Amino acid sequence: MSSIKNTVDDSTAQEKNKVEKSTLYLVAVPIGNLADMSERALKVLSEVDFIAAEDTRNTQHLLARFGIKKNLVSYYEHNKRQRGEEITARIEAGESCALVTDAGMPAISDPGEDLVALCAEKGITVSCIPGCCAAVTALALSGLPTGRFAFEGFLSTSKGERNKRLAEIKNEVRTLIFYEAPHKLRTTLDDLYEVFGDRRIALCRELTKINEEILRTTLSKAVEIYKEKSPRGEYVLIMEGASSKEINDLISEENSLLSLSPKDHVSHYEKNGLARMDAIKAAAKDRGMTKSEFYKLLNN
Image (cartoon, rainbow, N blue to C red):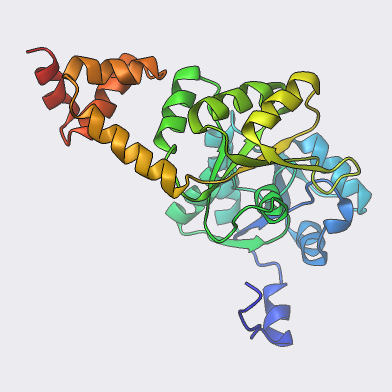
């Protein structure tokens, strides 16, 4: 964005800094280093009528560091439907609300996306106070291509859903971004290596904190490293996309699959970890058929 000319004059900036009633503000907070808290974010948090927070205890600690006292309501994955209606009702009644997550930008891999969608549905004004985002921070540090990328967030904890998603993005040429918790890192690295082969990867942990670490390596080496090393802290994984050779190999594989019998075609995907119905769906897609059409062919 550095090539885009800044055309916002002081008067416009001052107008944008005013906290308006009947508005939801998405306020980015630091991902580790409190010095990254912006002046504008502090102003909005100080002036809104109430704050919706992922964990009110964590947000209370953050506000206390900056001398801010404010009414807090919880908003997280398991109460988002009911609480979303309550929050929007207050905003429609004339109050202003700031939405924050525990770290980074709300509504990115976060239940806040549902609140934004609800506000859009109800015609409520939403304004964003930009700031830290772990995904973009890690991407910039990765040393991998940054011109085009795809954000995947957290992979499913379900083995079947995880395998299905990884199979779907195997031929993605853009740089891929994943979030991962330390206790699941080893399993995730094993799964990525099994599906994608030995691609380059950057493992970024504890971003902006004292123990920040950026490990630029390959998937095979990362698997070996973490057999001995205990994962610590939250991770962002930046993995290179598919190469031209991988895409050509995939095309050759797809062509060879079309020469198989329907039964063997399905067996190929089952051997690669897909559940039977997902394997049937994948085989049908390869052949340009609907699942029901292929299912009939399979059972003839």
